[in-house]
Amino acid sequence: MINCNYDAIDENQFFLTVAGEKHQANELTLNGLAPRVQLAYDTYLNNFPGLCQQPHSLFAADPQRSRDALQDCYGSPTQSFKQFRKDYSARQHPAIQELCPYCMIETGWTLDHYIGQTAFPEYAILTKNLLPCCFKCNQQKNAAWREDGEKVFINFYDDTFLQHRFLDATVLIHNNVPVLRYQLIQPAAITDEDFALIRRHFLALGLLVKYNNKAHNRFSTEIAAIRKSIDRGKSDATIRQDFLDRYDSHVDQYGRNHWETMVYLRLANHVPQVRALPIP
Ligand SMILES: [Zn+2]
Image 1 (cartoon, rainbow, N blue to C red):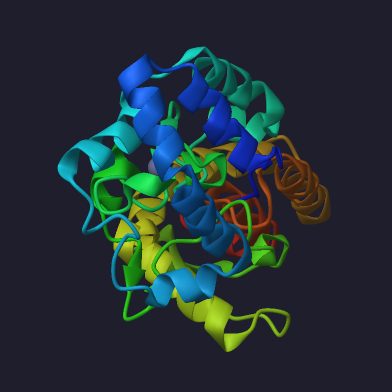
Image 2 (tube, rainbow, N blue to C red):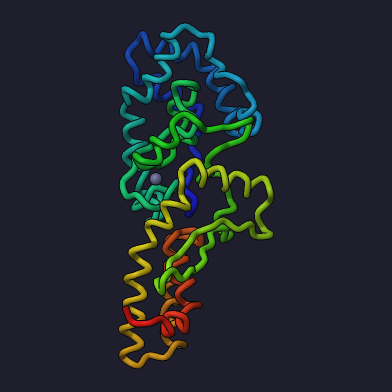
């Protein structure tokens, strides 16, 4: 997992620009709402924990047409918003251009509202509220962005603990077949609060089970490759170093908490065990 790049634009100005591109009736409505939208933006950008505790949208009691006008900024995008979306992917790390940051499994994503726009229409085009998300994660995410006043999902703009490894895996041998089982571990550099968030994120998206399944085939393929290397006379130390090199390059590309990095790291440390297994 790695962070997404947030292009810190002037969000208030962006809202006014989009409002100015709307047809006259909507433009008037949006300009009338702008001072309260700016208040809402200020809370989002400067006091997100406070927002997690805020019971409702600032516009919860507004007429439906006002709420619709806010959502319409996203639903019927203007030129500026289309341009933002068009440029978004190119500003991201290559791994994010390829994979959904929430799961790091699925390719292909669309920009998704971290806080759903039905409940909080004021954040419909707040760019800080828009994150890449695949279809599957989006469905599992649904509208549940908070629970008991705490975030449920890692925020890939703001949460800076992704550089520390919290994803771990253990090699288990079942009927002479090695399998990988993923788990979360709390390194000293990650606070209890952040680790609880990581747990909520993984639980909500069922990531450990997905990684167990995903690694299954990869693990078998890699073990078959180790057997070929052994047959060709490669030493354990050489095979181990090959896996460590692949681990390093994978970390560089996908971060320390990508499921595949653990395949390489664990195999690097289990070459003698693989050598000792009976040939199937
Ligand atoms: Zn995903």
